[in-house]
Amino acid sequence: MVIPQVKVTGTTDLVLDGTKLKQVKTVTPKKTENFSRRLDYYREFKDGSSVADTSLIGDGYDSIWTAPTTAPSDGEQYLTARWRNQEPLLSVAAGGQEFDDLWIMPGSAKLSEDDYTLDVIHPGDGLAEDYKGIDAVGKAAVVRWDSDDEDTADDQIRAAQAAGVKLLLFVNDLDGRLREPIIKSSIEVAGLSRTEGDKLIASVDASTTGSLPLRAVSRPDTDYLYDLVRTWKGRIPANPVYAPTTGQLARVETTFRNPTGREVYENRYDIHPWTTYQVGTNRLSTAGAHRTDYVSTDSTFSWTEEGELQSLSYSASGSVTYPAGSTTDVEWFGPVVRPRINGSVQPPVRTGDEVDVIIPSWGDSGGSHANDVAFGSTGAQETSLYRGDTLLAKGGAGVSATVPAKKGVYRLVHTATRTATAAFPYSTDTRTEWTFTSAAPRNGDDSEQLPLVQLDYTLPTSDDGKAVADASLLVTPLHLQGGSNAALNTRKVELSYDDGATWTTARLSGRGNGKVSLPLHAPASAQYLTLRVQAGDSRGNTVTQTVVRAAGIAG
Image (cartoon, rainbow, N blue to C red):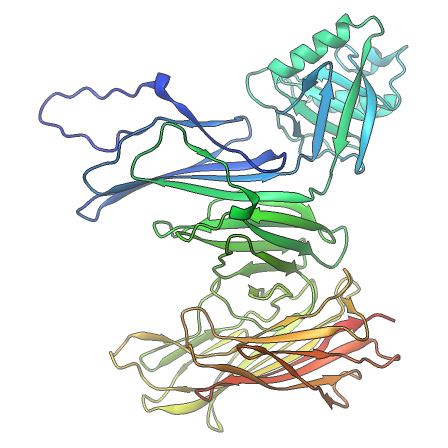
């Protein structure tokens, strides 16, 4: 609750009236459950000062509320609500109830994707002795959680597993939702609120058979998700509801590539003009999974996206926006992996006579993704800066150098090698050479971004990174965000199927803005694709990039 503006001329009473609270909520086109919520308040005053508050809403709460206000006359106020809603991982209904406050407990196994009809029983306290004489095999069991002794849950889970229970439901003995870490289980374990859980227990106990039919729908890897943001500027309305239609959202087809089954932690952060930080809760997904995301498209903010492939890779996008009604494919952790700079890392800059460049060597298939983790193997990097043919400085993942003030042509050469692994046998050797022109900024120690042209690749591959022999490759040259707007071009693409021993120049089809497409035409004996690309812009800045074993070729 806020009072956006108070004029104090003497003793003043401030009244925050909770009876006027209104629920801040979203209505999604498809059925969802909430994964995370956040509420931001930002107040800006005419003198330039400001106040900001951000609250992540904890798991124990199923709603967020605020009080309506008028718009302030001094400055501006913004209320931002952020929801990440997903297709329910587990939906349960029994005895005329649908349990919309259900949480899967951290540490729980998950039922295979299917629709289930089970009998639900109430085996007393749910300990081993309570299952004696009860046929619990293949059934659901509902028992009470003991918040005074949470170790009891370990015994209840072990007892349910030993009795053959398929689904264990814990009823909270305190107010609010129940989502507590548990021992690693071989059955699915979920928590219910006390309100809904007590009703279920009462219905089971009142049954003449000691059980009720229960319907469960399991979607362990959710097929769709909503990333939604709504900002109210000025007044906070009496009905703060965000109910976008599918056409008002953008569709992002999200795929987590190689290797199948490994854990993925990912998030999509909303970045506003008044925030310089990222706030959110990482979501656990699975490599090899595909998901359709529906995202807000308000032009007043942008997204940044991150994905961590357990122990192998950490990738991050730059600033991203999606137009309403659009469909965009976003891939993570697949080929073509190569050096890629974006807005998530320090930009390559010249400050006075100092040049500083850091190059993430292992950007993945998602276009504008930067990554400096070598996919779980030993990696080596070397970066060299030349003015003409004169070596100025050498470093590892980047380079810093003092350069002459006078305008000159520079070469930046970055090599990166990694040991092939069974999980990711690709991009074992890359070499990227940029040429660019630079002079000292006109205003002394000002910083200017270096015009390093980047290359993105779109190549359809299987989850294990293999393309079919006649696959089509799309090559896209790009400027860094906030950099040059010179016209881009792709001059030459060469293909090799023997790790660069011999090369074939590909025939290119222009796709606009410097993009080109080409068929691979891989020979029957090919196992890997190696690439060499030359691109640049109309101001003479160029890039030549070689990627050995850029992708596999399906046999």
